[in-house]
Image (cartoon, rainbow, N blue to C red):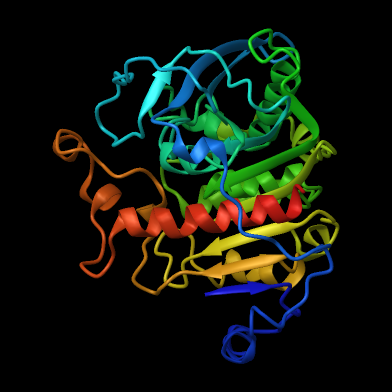
Length: 355
């Protein structure tokens, strides 16, 4: 179900009532300027999409920032077989030239979830690229599967800085040669990446000391001495990036932001949520965003859809390595169908709000 610009609601009961009565065809958005027309792009007909890995180093933080860049290409090269055989990836051609049939492309930045990586939502990159977007997905060092470090992961504010640094580098990247439309930069955040997006949109952390104390109490693996040296002043600084004009959040976390801070967000926010989210419960996270940000566009998934349904499908070899909850879906849920549905929602959202 898709809804546009829902009114603020006081509780989950009110939200359900709004959903039962609302009509997506009649609802109006304060952001929307003109009705969308059906669109077919040249990119949809491509056999494969281009992909390139960009490896940067942020000298001010002594921190690596690795980006997976997907882009339209009119090359006709052999398909790339990724070294990562865990996930099912789209058809890709590595390091081929960027397509020439458009002078500039809109850019979508992507942020992964806790312990994820830059390539675990390549299905969404494929959908966006085939509709004329360049997609740049960032590895958040210390919080990926390959670089995981618990202490580094607790410094969630570093994620927003990664995205801003990545945009800086992409706008200077010789390979792209000015191909990015700087007036059309969007963002997709999944899970903890959604919380990263809220900060980039202007939300600011309130009582960071209290948040860290709560994490120590909730998770036994987090010890007080791990966070004793943290410079909390860094966490309280604004991470807002004015270049990001619209963002899509998928099952986002929101626990570090107070309601009054969320109200400061003034760009269009699209929201995809799973009502029975077993990782980030709806009432504690998504509902807070719905109440105080008021999404420009909202998609409620079926109750059987799980939190991990939004990462790639897992290959048969991958199933031997991954924990079952990563790839095991409800019998009534086909992950490929879910990806098609959410992918179309993402395309429509960014076509509408990055016009």
